[in-house]
Image (cartoon, rainbow, N blue to C red):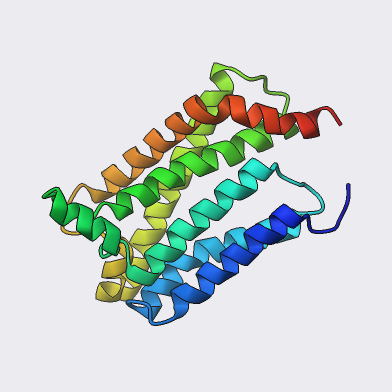
Length: 206
């Protein structure tokens, strides 16, 4: 496989770093920015290290960028104070800023396609109910692990992590976060599987 960076991927990187640089300029809170953006930086590192050994489909790389942007924007404003969702809250008399819910929906939606790609290409599993069940289970495990990380950070830093948690006074916030990830994973498989299969043909037929 060609080891050179493809133009489409180069474009995704340019967008990633442009948004990243914007986000670190006068963020709401620099510590919260770091906590929220750190997973995106880990994702970039993994994608970079595996780029030549296990090239992913363009669909997955695009979705990874979308997820990274959601994280980075949340880092800049905090999830509880994202302006567009503040406007939606006020315009529709909602109980809270729902950007946090969008973030956790993406935490299920996008990993579902990433995991699907890895399992389809690297395992003997056939497309079907078992594959979907395993993908959803893995996405829920990722969501639960992230909630444990949030808990650990909160215990370690105290009130400094309030903006990172983004609970907005909701005692069921953790459960809602995991439910949104579950919903995201299910909707990703229901809406994206056929499109994903078209992108996978390039690799499976090699």
